[in-house]
Amino acid sequence: MEIKFKVWYEKDGEVLFGGGRRELLAAVDKYHSLTAAAKHMKMSYRAAWGRLRASEERLGKKLVESHPPNRALQLTKEARSLMSRFDKLEQEMRDLVLKLSQDEGNSR
Image 1 (cartoon, rainbow, N blue to C red):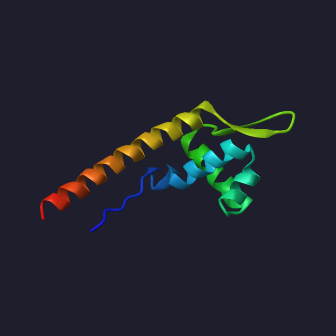
Image 2: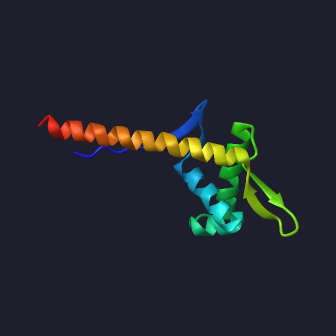
């Protein structure tokens, strides 16, 4: 038996943030471009833009900012904090699942 899980933040039935959006922000941080981040994730620019904007609107916080002169995208402090908290929650869930799996294996 194997325990699987996914973690995401939701409000009023709408996704605020999850693994996919975390991955998108990490790609934006790496490439400083939503176009390149979308390409890296094998998704359309429109889909990436829609997810980013939906999260920003639902959270009421900017997650990315563009900076002149080349309009490179950078993550905001809020985005980095959200990613850090999400990573911590996901790691805690992994640890719990591992413990439960070990406990299940020991009870046989």
